[in-house]
Image 1: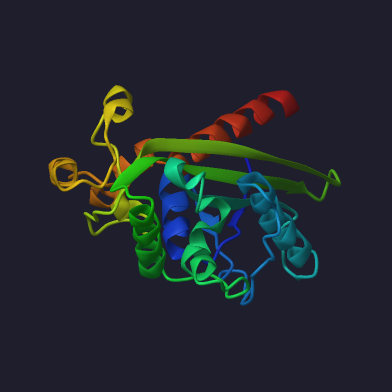
Image 2 (image 1 turned 30 degrees about the vertical axis):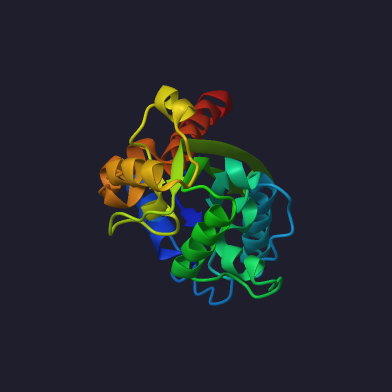
Length: 245
């Protein structure tokens, strides 16, 4: 879509990098706009709601700034890992899962490493070495056109299915990437015994080699939840182009 400026509503450098690569367009970050504080209260109950909260918060901030372009698109993503054996946790609390496990409700985000350790602990408490899981990414967009005095906003989604395990592999990526695997087909996953018996644990864990954290950005983007959401976003923008002429 012919939008001169795309603004990413996140301070997360990894997310900025993935957006930049997948969109293959020039983007503006909060740093570029001199927005030093951006920490909206994510009070939604779904990824979609929290993504919209972030986009709308940034939109209202931009209304008070000078030298903001008259036409731009805001993109805000909310994403996380949903683990079947944990009834969908950490879900929307993925970025602060360790704090939630420690009973800290208002402690902000916890570190990636501590979140992974909290997830391993939760899996072991359930007596399993792993579980079916999926990553979800919801991207809210607000397209602002001051000349026409209107906004267009909506949310697109992407998911990446696989398994999460107490084993970590890989140096790329961030978050839970090093614990998330797609080494098995869906049919094979359906037959896996995730029980934390020694023999099963050794057999299955040794076979896990290809976490998302082993993939270079190009390969990760082709299969990841964020890559799929961005593909849907670009398709939506193309449809809007046709609709709006």
